[in-house]
Amino acid sequence: MKNVLAFSGSPRSQGNSVVMLNNFLKGASENTENIVIVNPYKAKINYCTGCLRCNMLKECSIRNDDWKELSEKILAADILVFAAPVYFHHLPAPLKNIVDRFRSFVNVQITEKGIDHTPWKKWNKDFVVILSMGSSDDVDAEPIIDLFKYMTEILGSKNRLHIIKGTRLAISRQVERSKEELEILYPKLNLPLHLVESDYEKNQQLLLDCADLGRDLSIK
Image (tube, rainbow, N blue to C red; front, side):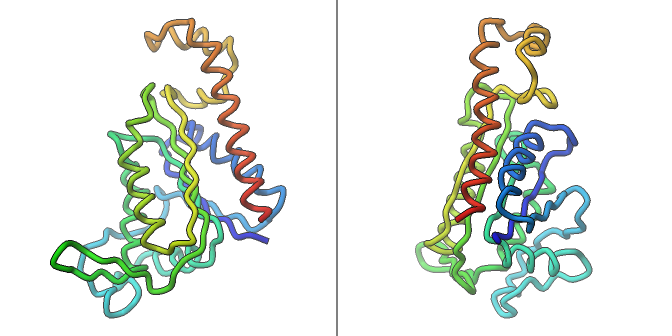
């Protein structure tokens, strides 16, 4: 069975990215029982200091936190899931802090033209990024997507990146709310009511897409 490690990066227990992640994991659970969920807000993960000692040790040198155990789970995972709202065009700080510690999985060599990243061991994993954002334009998520494109590339050419984005999602559980609930909500958000029908259908499809992706990736 596939090993799934999911990072739930929302500070809201009923945030839209949490709902989307739960649908992904519901689909995955049809094929595997090996699912671990990490809450970055509760994990004790110290900040990367850029000390570069991992270039010598081939592992992070920072001690007295949860990284060693978490890094072992990351390496053992077949599917890594990062679910989060988009805050100021990027990940919420606790999840970004974990992503920064991925630095220890690669050797960094400064060159005349830039930096070369070489993984200690090339990965063959599925990366899943599930994002919710208040904006109606998913361009707000591009900095996050660019980061994960780069991560999957430098950690191994066989890695695969899957992106699911939900837009115009500002209120907890909005992605799973009924048309009637959206009709009450949209005037409060100063959004025109004519958007309700299409947004409701779009949101329902998002939840189906999350479940389908979880099911598909976990069965391979």
